[in-house]
Length: 283
Image (tube, rainbow, N blue to C red):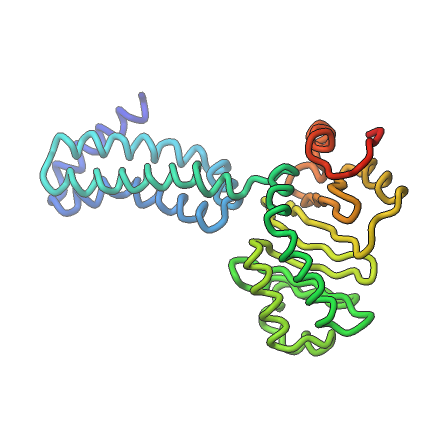
């Protein structure tokens, strides 16, 4: 209430002293500022959420100011009313899209991973087979894409981050990868809506499903069925969930972004209802 009263006083003073064009511009200021926060959130959900949390003391008065500007413009009427009402509507729709579309797309769980796997398992197997044949024997390959741009390029014993896109042609030759093979791997990942692939042949290969902040969710495909002791080891590892005798769900947390393991309750519930293992476990 104090902030609203202060803004009311400032607005009256400014309206008396400024021409009509500047009055409209003044009332647009909170919408422009809020729009910047929303744009940042659209660009990167977690960075945007971080800044909104840190600068809540600025965001909250901006929201109050925006509502106040809408009420005042409604009284003034004319073009002023339609400009402010349009800005308000755009930002409300943007917030709804964030809550109903963007945020759910960034959420992940073993159940979501299972649904995605069942839909794309054939294409995933083809990608692994293609990558296995594309790189030289004895070499490791890791590729990760962010918004269609190569952000990580790993070859045996070396990982390139910020220079991955810039130096990719130079690095590709070291593992026997040509342009057509690279583009095919990239397009196959895009087709199955995944972000990365990391080879650990001849044992297994990992396909990255998505990142949630700094955390990552991955599918680990073993080239031959896992032994009993491997499955039991996975059952006791909080970062792993065995889905069937060849596939593990893997969760790797970021150092600064929350717990780095599946929730024990989530893991137990998933194994009970969704695991494709053909025998009971003691987990």
